Length: 400
Image (cartoon, rainbow, N blue to C red; front, top):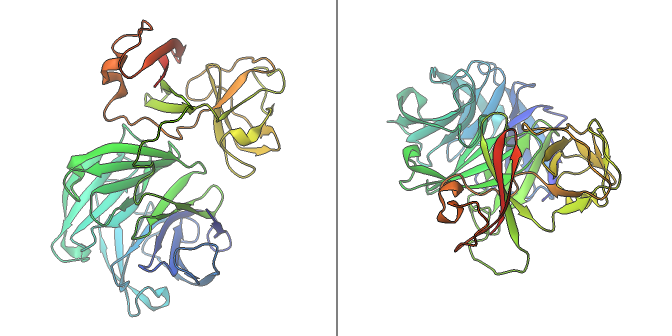
């Protein structure tokens, strides 16, 4: 969807939130050390008139990375990497930062790198993401939206999905949790079997974004999602056809087959990627092992753009690029994620490598019965297509 640049006010945007109607947007970042307020002439619509209104310096919270409000906007909460505490402010006029004043600070000792912040809708629970330990931290608040009453309850390690958890956003019913990660450059969606209880979370979906995303806000009806990140200083909007869900809830048979790739990157993280037939092109030249500008037949078939990075696979080599210029991939980093840079002939097949529609880690695809054998035998739900090696690990590709 539409985008909006906040570069004039904050060139390292990290956190984003809106008022309940979407007619006000708030941005924090690690450069300005303030909360920036904008108005939207149409709620949750970046194509409408967006106007910067005011900013409020949060001197108690250097390098802020997240901002949240209570329901009526009379309380504002900020956390950040400067001191990794949570700071509370009172607003005499709801969602008007010009009326804000500092109230109190909750000293949190659970992590030295606080990034994300969210609350249960009634204010009786608070959640923080921490980059030092790669965890979500859950607090109970005996007084609604009163951080002086907060007590630590439990935490959950996120290393299996992303080692840099930043933005955090719950669905209103507490059954779905969204975590933005800058390591995977996307959003992990978790489902809670018990509402608001992080110990019951299971990983459900992943949506690739690119652009070093860090802040997230979703409209109350779950159909509009907004992402802030410091790579392009843009707020980006997305439309969700199914509320609080990345994929369609119905199944449709198509003639476009799907294949998958499993590999372990150089951090030890297992990756499961779906390969879509349409998302591929071919090399338009011979490519040596040190080439940093790669010309392809049709760059529109690949992830990334003139302002966005992307990743591709050519054979067993994974390549990351900063952006595109026509059909040329610019500033390529060769042999990423533990793969080896090598030569490729003109006409080599190039496929999108980003985890655009990743197979969830839970349940683990390697535990599926169809993957018990790699001998090429056709089984009930998969046909194994071959085995190769990346970073010394067995890589399996097959057709679902």
